[in-house]
Amino acid sequence: MAIAETAQIHASAIVEDGAVIGDKVQIGPYAVIGPEVRLSEGVRIGSHVVVTGQTVIGRGTEVFPFASLGTAPQDLKFRGERSTLEIGENVKIRENVTMNPGTEGGGAVTRVGDNCLFMVGSHVAHDCHVGSNVIAANNATLAGHVEVGDFAVLGGFCGIHQFARIGAHAMVGGMTGVERDVIPYGSVIGNRAHLAGLNMVGMKRRGFDRPQIHALRAAYKAVFLDEDGSLHERASAVAAGLEGDGAAREMVDFILAGGSRRFCVPES
Image 1 (cartoon, rainbow, N blue to C red):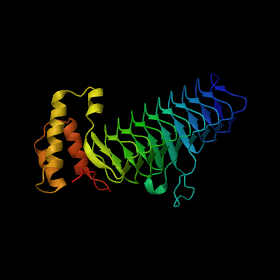
Image 2 (image 1 turned 30 degrees about the vertical axis):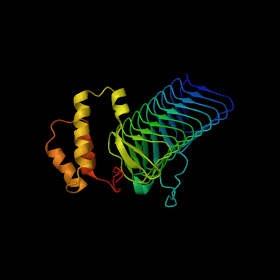
Image 3 (image 1 turned 180 degrees about the vertical axis):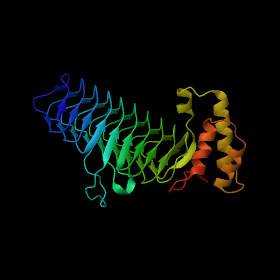
Image 4 (image 1 turned 45 degrees about the vertical axis):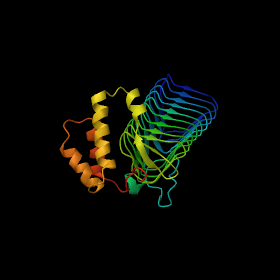
């Protein structure tokens, strides 16, 4: 066990042999830290938190009471293979959040980026890859193998289907069930999500300029509101006329890259 001298560990906490505890880490009452866990500088672990498995938590991340990080994946194919959970820097993980490590079939790693907020009861399942600056509201649920881009916002009680992709800067409405891929900058809502337009509020908050927004709007209309050709053909045509690497380019590249799920589209 390697515990920095500046770490503050409550007398009732259990830190198992082999754990690596960095400078200025704080571990609260009745927390349990497993033998293969690594807590980086300034991590704060609240009371009754369990961190186990091969879990790495980045600098400045704060974990609130009763969260459970690194326990075995909820996947019947899991056979105890070695897999990891990697959580970035300055992440806020609120009460009762659960995050599981990966499985052999998904690359054996679940990864969460920096500066994210996971509100009460949200869940990150095995083999998910979550970007940075993501917000998951209360009880938002990611099934296995989900990809979430930077700055995406997941509304309360939403559910994301296995293997679905949520593009960067997208907004998923509360209580929305997402079975299909959500384009970057898209906004979706519904019992089974449909594309309700672009996440204009998020773009304005993050300082996107008018030319970028106008270009994205034009690309969106050409891809999703035009009826000529297939979705892929329309996206290819738009891509051919774009210059640079702005938001419109990001959207059409996401579509052309494809995934294992179909795309959320506007209601007909």
